[in-house]
Length: 344
Image 1 (cartoon, rainbow, N blue to C red):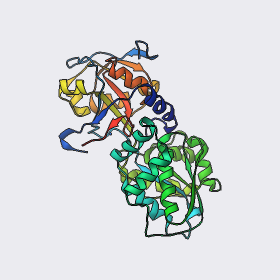
Image 2: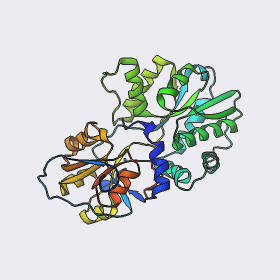
Image 3: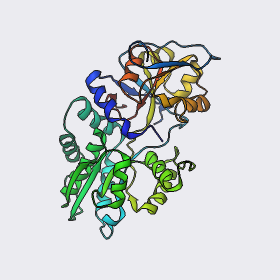
């Protein structure tokens, strides 16, 4: 599970306006995730048993491979009111065709077009549907469908892609922005206001898990996509939801350094960083020091050693700026951020 999706819209909007930074995905072994005027605060976290590596300023940022799979999967998945598709054999396959056409690099490009290039979600979605050959589906259907979107651009673009494909098949589909998950999930369960919402596998799994089983329920989402989707499917049955196929596209926590730092120390993964460097300065949201998939997980899973933590934001402009200026060594970003350069 990652930091709440509702935290993303403001950082992304600011990120486009304040600074456009180029990030590149790096993977280990070829495998396929402030201070100083930035308004953050810092906390010392201890010493290091390996050589301390100073932060290296630079405009271009690279995401280090999560090679030990610390992060919970957060693949895009269509969440659907079960009653809305009862007796309809067309809607889910159409949504599955969208899932199959998306991957993380494509999602980055879609977000860049909206957040950085300032195009509309409608324009970008329609272009994607045409380019992906989804504008003339073999399936056909009819009826009114409302797709809900959360209050950030990625969700609006994905929702508009769903609507465009459904309209091409003969449905009367439209998109409505309906706020955060606390607002839109009850509306989806009810099925009167919205019938479909683009969602995120791990985050949604844990949200429903805590809703159904209590705030202290043991986590069932993990880095295993199949296992997490299985858990999500079972939980969905309890509240009247069904799901399409998960997309290869993910929007999850990731950790970045500057390209200059990665080149200097020859690191492409979090494991390589732990072997090469100690005394790191970590930047992220205040909750990072307590969340198992942030600082504690980096320490326990990878053995990373931090000299300091700086409280900034969740994948937003403060963290990116601190990385660029050499104020932090490692910073939390999101894997589908429109500022990222898709992997080659």
